[in-house]
Image (cartoon, rainbow, N blue to C red; front, side):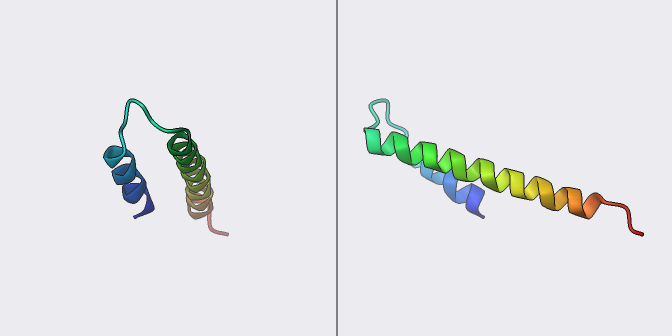
Amino acid sequence: MAHEDKQTYLMNNKDEHAQPDQCESVQQQLTDANKEIEDLKLQLAWLDRPYE
């Protein structure tokens, strides 16, 4: 899954002296992950709605 790929990437790229482009990449990953979380929340809300 995408989450596992991101988590693996972050674990493999831990560096106390990260380059600016790496920090930007991590920031982009966090942004993408937050968008995915919001999308999944909407999907759950749609599934939890009462049937008419």
